[in-house]
Image (cartoon, rainbow, N blue to C red; front, side, top):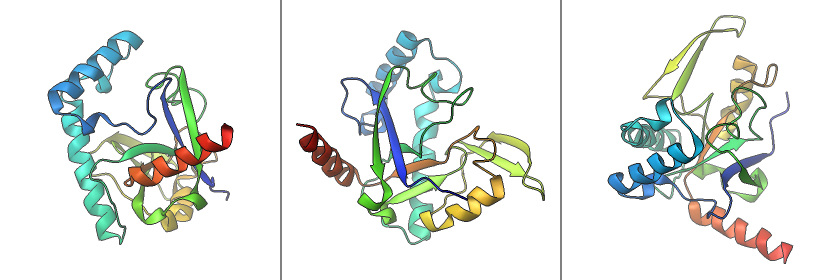
Length: 191
């Protein structure tokens, strides 16, 4: 059972890679999101007016769950990343939300994992599995199961994440300064 040893951030070309809409006031964030959805023909739940309200409620839940699990988040708004890379096909975030995206890959060894939480398959969804690990139902949730890095072998085993790589494990990084330092380091190495 191989667990990826890096996380990936997908972001729009020319933008700072570690921005979050929830850093902005709600009205401004909704205007930015609406313009982005219109430009890229994105619909579904992401385009809904109350999406960012739900996203903030879920972020608060994950933040407190990470603290309960012994984590040490620094920021109150996370940077969303993918453990490994986004799966190909229907659930590839590069096909809808992150069209024409650039990416930055950060080795897990380069960051403080106590400031990182993980959810599967996504922070807004939940899977229910049978005794054999088959997904029997899925749906939206405001209270996702939150995991630490040490929990990942059990999550990968239970959900057979990499058997049929349809969904990714989402990582929420709660220390933007740590990510920024790594980004500056790799930018300096490329020059």
